[in-house]
Image 1 (cartoon, rainbow, N blue to C red):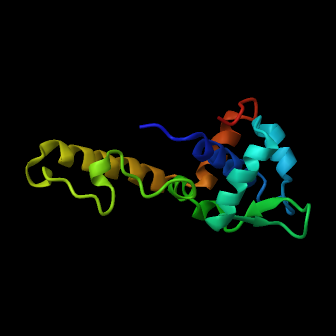
Image 2 (image 1 turned 60 degrees about the vertical axis):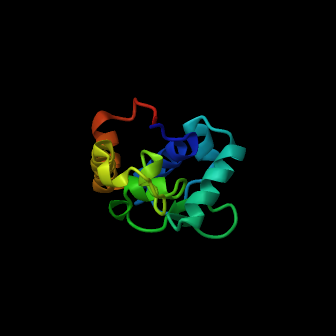
Image 3 (image 1 turned 90 degrees about the vertical axis):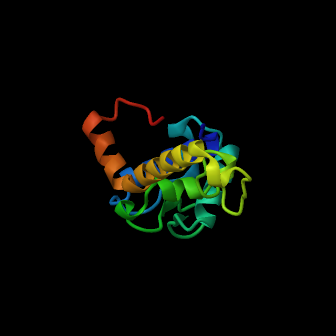
Length: 145
């Protein structure tokens, strides 16, 4: 299982916004792009998805930057994941609406289903506030990955 780059950059963008949520105002897209070593053009797509998911909003008028749409403690990693991907299904037969002819007698399906639940639960258990706290504890000598 591999997370795509939009999901990873989306999470980094959200963490950056979380780190500055109490500073007032917004963070300019150009600043996020520079801090995260991502092109402004690619960040456009990421921001569009985050806005469509209701996770971020413009801080004010044009050129005001972006801010979180709700407190960082209320936004989980899974919320960010959903802005870029559908419901988490680590294998195809677990996807909603997908039928598997082996479903009734497949021991591996139970294993994959339990693993899927564990991954999703962990993503739902960690919010942006927790990530920001970890980041501050480690110090800002680290780049957001």
